[in-house]
Image (cartoon, rainbow, N blue to C red; front, side, top):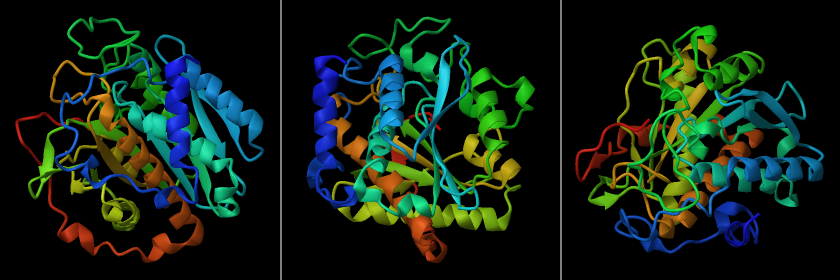
Amino acid sequence: MSLKKKVLSVSLSSLMALGAVTAVSMPAQAVGNGPGAGNGSIQTSILHTYDSLVDYLKTQDAKQQAMALEVIGQTVKGRDIYMAKYISNPANPTILFLTQQHGNEQLTTEGALEFIKHLGTGKTKGVLDHVNVLIIPMLNADGAMGDVNFSLDNYLADGDRHLTRYNANYIDLNREHDKAPSQMEPEARALHENVLQKYKIDYLIDLHHQGTLSETEGQLVSGSILYPTSPSVKPEVLEGSKKLGSVVYNAIQPTGWGHLGKYSGGSTNNIGRNGIAAYYDVSTLLFEMRGMSDHYIESYAIGQKSNGYLIKQTITTLDAAVRAIADGSIDSADTSFWDTLPTQKSRQSEESDE
């Protein structure tokens, strides 16, 4: 691991140093009108590469008795796709965390890797006895490594590589979910055939990034959330999704550094949160974090000064969801906040990034 990655790892680990992750404070100015688009250079060299991610997962697998590591398939370019599994009892409720369907949305992956380490500590003692956790920390490894069959010459980031939304075949993996698996791109097919059809999954948080200029109430959001909006999703599945959103909202919004809006997304089943809810009866939640690790549009990519709180936001989200499912408090989660949660708008026109 490079010196930069070691420094990043130490700084992230310090977020976890005392108590539960939700107890860590961050400066209130971190979000809202804090670090803006282009504030700080956009660096990819401090992020995990595919190879360093694999090494990290294998190291944690060797250290953690509760963890198992599974290869669920391969990317277009032949990279293994890994899933970390914590299954103590198949009868327990199960949550799946999915990151990097879009390869240029990597800070959620950095948070997911820290959370995997977190699950191996005493801070989650007893929690994994009551909930099963599946984590796919990098579905689109080819896009994350810029190993694609099209040009990335216009991408903005500095560092050792570029990252792109699409897989190697220039396909958006989050538009594949209404196809027969045999017609899907290899990464989406692996997710459907070897995870969604293999495991009984109750909840899914699909972690993404959006542009940097979305706001509600005049304040830039740290992220936005949305339940499935497909008309073919069963009412009880939708209600579970809204409860999952309540857990996340109530973990992030009071922190002082988090400010969430309601995402404005489509209702078609080719989108993951819709298709997976409709076809597998999984209660799904989309979480769009602020800013991307690379893009060809300047207002989408965010400088590294914002990395810390966005990674922290991911860790807090995963931790809160796992604890609420484990202790059953998700069942009584208050979903009324959805009725008044403002739908985000953009300070300038940005296309949908889901």
